[in-house]
Length: 142
Length: 142
Image (cartoon, helix red, strand yellow):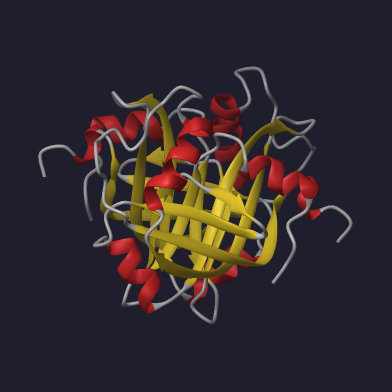
């Protein structure tokens, strides 16, 4: 496990969408955009629908990568960005509560999410961070 | 080859950064953010430095994926995004001219890029599109 520095934690806790990469059965890459948050040192995401290709891919091969683009640019106008590599595991249930918490960040403090009564409990994916990269304060001093 | 619909071409030709996924030797995913443009039906990117990990990865395994987040959101506030999967090939030279063209989109119409005299000719990566996904008008009607 690698500990996330405060600068990386701060970006993950904004409304920035994460580009999540998983691996297909043939080893080729797949990308989806997701909401993410933090629970301790893990990156978490909620999925109401348990029967999704990306969840089957994680169950088959848990190696994932995430990227988040920062609004900060350097002196020549190039954006900073955070890359995380790690291992994902799936935990049954808890998706509605997590999505409600993340919806306050991603959609607004008043939003009710999921927008339905009695949502399914779904799955939470939990990513253990193994590498931090990209361009930004999170890679300084290496 | 898959033809890009006009909606996807329009997003690629904006200042939206592309999240490029390549595969490491052990098959695990790597992500970098890059400028991209179009030449005919191919997606192109310029690299002044020919000795880069991502270029070595493309030479070893040309299967890549790209994602671009659209500023457009749907009725519940979720962003549209474009995912491209394809095969990349590397072409020697031509990077400064391509990067100058892309800098006009990404940094501004007056910008001189690369910001140095006599830049190296580098490499251009050219991606043949094999699959178009994500969420947006580019997947409608499927």
